[in-house]
Structures are given as structure tokens and as C-alpha cells.
Amino acid sequence: MQECRKRDIRREADSFRKRCGVGHYGISNLFRDCESLGYKLLRYPLGESADLGFVLKRDNDTVIFTNSCSRLSRELFTLAHEIGHIVLHMDKDKQFVDDNMTLSGGHSDEKEQEANYFAACLLMPDDEVEKFLDLQLPGFNEKGLSAMDIARLMSEFNVSFDMALNRLENLGKIDSKERLRLDDERNERRVGNLLKSVVGNSRLNLPSMDIEIPHEYVDCVIYNYNHNAIPRETLGRALAYCQLVWEDVSDRLVEHADEDKDSESAIGDS
Ligand SMILES: [Zn+2]
Image (tube, rainbow, N blue to C red; front, side, top):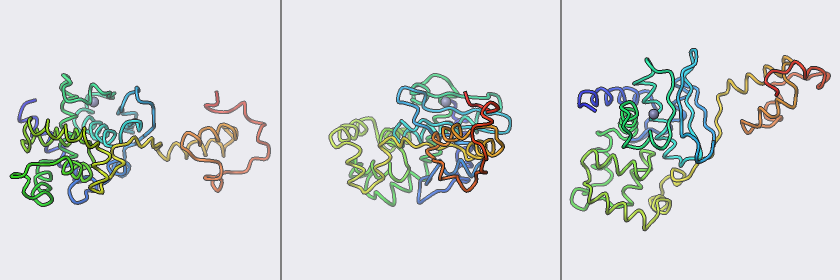
């Protein structure tokens, strides 16, 4: 990637970041930001061998999917990568599908490299990393960083241990030797334990298995039920996809005199 293109991507990531909720240094909840930015975000535990994410444009909707079977920190990186495709590439292409290959640093496709670079700049911008090291980890230049320091960075920026190491290396904060040493220390102490020891966010290192489906989906099935287009049974199944039960939405349902009579006109009940 050429230096001028990198600068453009940093600029895009910086201006996108201004639209997100930022804590002290890192973005607090990128999932929530998606909703306020008008993207339709779908999260589902699709399985460990399935794709990790995709983004597509349909009519006026921008739909992002992330697989919540991957560790939360990785799922957040996938989300940032998909946002990179939206910001950088969606004027020409209509969809991108991502797996372990496209989300790894070594992928040869230019657009995948750009989306990865965008994600890194969005989640861990140079100036915020610099500020964190200066204010929160004083003396790191002399002492070097410990794996516990990396866990602190993880918790603040909501990234994985590997992502934190990658970014620090790319920003010239650590060299390859230090990286190896930190990697070894991580293998000895395990990331989950490191996060606990710095009272960090241990959830980052685990798959969330969360299910998040845009509220329009629930509105749509309730509308269909209330207008006799789907039977009670189908409504129950559709709600179950969102981990909802009948009682959760009962105040929005219209009572039907005869539940069975119109199942023939059901939409999407196959
Ligand atoms: Zn991609």
C-alpha cells in the first residue's frame, strides 16, 4: 500500500471515529455505534468454521454480519474491518465476505489489506496509543512492556492480544525481539488470566455467542402475525431466533379468534 493511500485511510478512520462513542482512549462499544450510524447489524453464533463476517448493500440498507462464535476481541476487529469496506470500497462493490484469510495481515488482495489497515487505525489510532503509553504506562521506554501491560492495552482498546502486538510493532513501539518475548510471556500466563490480573475485560478473550438481530425483523414478524399472514407457530419460531418468547412481545400482539384458520396464507412458513 502506498504511503499516500495509507494517509487517506488514516483520515477516513479518524473522521469515522469522531462519530463513535470513545472512552478514555478506545472506542467503547462499536456494536452500539453501528446502530446509531444506521447500519443493520446482525450478530449470530454461526459456528467456528463458518465465515467471520460480511457486509452488503441492499436498496437503502447497509447490512453487516459478524459471527459471535469468534472471540469478542476478534469479532470487534471483524466489525471494524467490515466498516472499512463500507467507508473505502462500497461505492463500487456491493458486498464483501470475510474469513480467517481475508482478516489476516498477510492477505494479498489490496482491498482486504486496506480494510485491515482501516480497522487498525480505527481501533488503535497512533496518537491514542502514544497517549496511553505515555500516561498509563510511564517508563515503558526504559523498562519495556510486560504481557500485563498488553492486557491493559487490550482492555482499553477492546482488541486481541495479537492485534495489540501487531499494532505496537507496526507503530515502531516494540521490535520483533520484544514481540517474541511478549508472545512467550502470553503463552505462559494465558490471556484470560492476564486480563483478570489487570482487572480487565475478560470477555474479550471469549466468544460472546450473542444473537443480535435488527428490531425491524421482530417488527416485521409481529406485523405479519397481527395481519393474519403467519400463524402463531411461525411467530414463535421467528421469535426464538432472536431469543425472545411469546410473553416478551404479547403487549404488541392482536388476539386472533381462530389461530388455525389462515395458516394457508402464511408468508415464509415452509
Ligand atoms: Zn474484507
